[in-house]
Picture 1 (cartoon, one colour):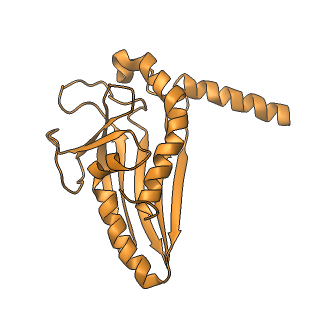
Picture 2 (cartoon, rainbow, N blue to C red):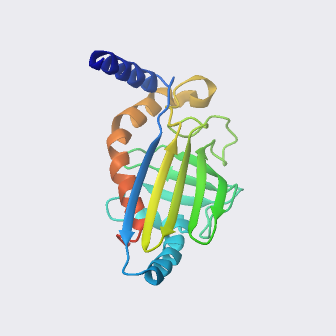
Picture 3 (cartoon, helix red, strand yellow):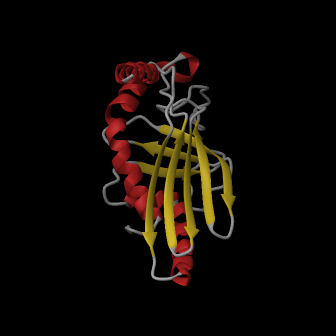
Length: 203
């Protein structure tokens, strides 16, 4: 049984590497406050941190650059809206990675927005400018339950973009990013960001 599990795991990792399979991964940080009233104030502040995307780049320990763009692909300093884009540049890699906001949800105690990889809105190419395929998604979320505040980054169907037209000329590079440096860097980056959303650290 153990040998079968090991073989299946190796097979799955190979399928991930070749872009034939995806992964789901969730990062969560939580902060407990003295009382519910304090947590409610912290939640309102956390919403501001969630929606001020450009400030994420200033976080200690995060070396990626996040830049919000409007539906015309122009850089802006405002709250995200459905259809807006985020440009992401990883440290040490000059290529741009783009995602588009496909959904925003908000109620009294939770707020989130979901993005998926997309083409560069400024060059007219159909190529997905990201190391994950366009079917992948990433949700950034903050929620309050009683006096506890939680920040999340939820990745779904994180399949390497190294097949067919989506990858274009980036097939090999996307594999290196997703299966190489990103694999370790992801834990650090999203861990820092969810700490920030939950109010455990500040810029």
